[in-house]
Length: 342
Image (cartoon, rainbow, N blue to C red):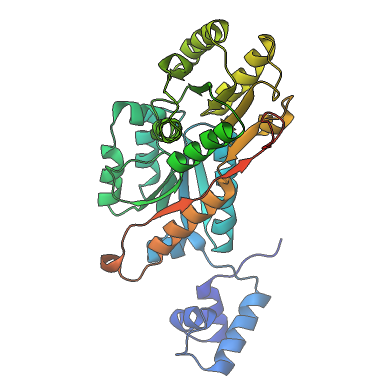
């Protein structure tokens, strides 16, 4: 393998200063064009490569973004990551990804570990435990220390930073309205994410749609919990005791449960039970019948978050920078689990 030359070696062989070599390689206007060409061609011949670590230390920039996601098994976060990586790559940034596993302690540890000169800024979605405990001080401390954060999906108004969200309330209202439009009147609400900000907004959208259509809110048809075990017990009892014609599920596990239990209890889907789920995961298309979903456009969320962070990092005047909240519109994707409009 050809040995890589250093700035000092190039300068010595060409009889110029290290400063002149450095400026020529960075295309500085202070160096004449013939000298630039001579030095650049010689550096290429000698296999010169800049020391990225040294440059980062000098510029106090790592050109690296830290991404913290709460759950590796959730396909939505994987889709968001593809959008982050796409923009980061286009802008010349590297990405370090960590998983909080819904743990407040791990979230704090990861923030502290990576903010110690490893990364320039964070893109993250808040862990379940942080939202449950309503504890967000660790984010504010990192921001106050000069490391910017962009939150996506699960956010909090208690932290001043850039945010990327979907229109959870409006899209839940629209999905419920769609069930009403196709003739559903006894619409159940299923959720195992009631402790998350997004879950609460979606539930409010469902209730608003019922109210606007003068449909009484039947609490017996609403299962809001943060426990899968509690949900399994309650949903089985609900199907035993009540007749339904619609289900709006706020997360993928409850969507799957809705189809499974509906079929088990003799419903024909979508003939006499229509189901819409939130989040367009891989199982939505593979279920039989395939699941109609509210798609969150994960890659677009990731792209928007990465652009916000990089804009912040490359902003020339921090004092004039104002925090932004970008709203990515969702899309209702109709498949086999919902009846067609007549």
